Length: 470
Image (cartoon, rainbow, N blue to C red; front, side, top):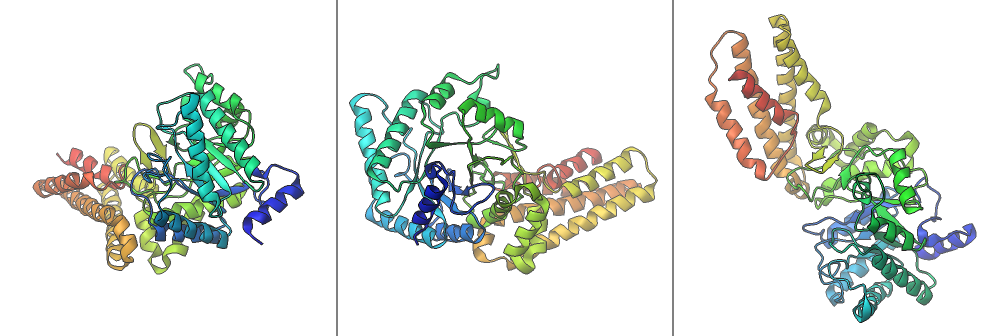
């Protein structure tokens, strides 16, 4: 039986609105969970999308959302029909999704130019229907219309547009599944004002939107970890409905120099109707975090992020897993002025570095200081060996995705080891030569436009060494 007919049948038996993702084909703590190709930058290739759909099916993720920001027919030129070649490619993806028991959700982001009033609005509704009908003809039954990252904050107008699309689609086709949306204010930090009250836009959008449309949001920030149940409850209260997650990890389109190779943060998932993880443009490397995300939604109560992370790397990298773990451990946290997500990079190594500084600052006996120094050097040597192994043995496609970061980690660790030797000389009463260390640091700085890794650990340790030695 076709997957859409299966799901529709179950929905009728349950007596619930399958259109709102409330009754999936098989029971799970989170009814619908998957991947949303929603990042900025180079979209995935057709082969990468097919690979990801197969990955989703194999890991129990039951949905894929097609929403690449840089597909012009998705966003900038949304009114225009897809050329035949691209429609053919989409048809292959839709078929692959059906084969893998994955719901294919087709998304449009019209907000940059959408007209919400008068005759222009009627024309845009007609253009949207034409776009969605062309995908319906290919087998799509689940759709999304997104209003993220735009200037227009007409909440009531956006909701009216969505309501009209939903009503007409369901009138035309009895087998329509879901209609998803993302509001323009899509994280709670902008849904509320300084006093914690919902903004005028959010109130207007939430009150006008019909309940058959599922709303996605990103949590407390655009990309901010550590979400609590109380924070989720507060967001749900604003909308008067259960919100779904558009979770921005491992996506790194705001800083492609740093890879997100860590485990997914635990999320409060009680009653959450849908979870979509936004990946990196690096499809292969995204699978580490996505595999842990699959574990999370499968069994939230027993999710162990570190255990899941180890298992994901072991399953994906085989005999290269030990080396990949060492590398990935240094690239798990993403942070800038507004993003702060993913567990800390290399926490155990950071503790060892701090222990060395504590031994020196507390004037521990010299043998104790040297012991810490040698232990660190041993660990840094292990990192060097892991990087060399990956550079020599990773498949060409995966190596292409991470070569800049591997090379940068190699530079950093080599400089750290040189700095430790200079520190050993200082502790022994010798006079170290700082010139080679400064040259190594400058080389690292030159490459920081293309790669960051271990920012607060191995890279920060180099600066700490420089400050203490000079």
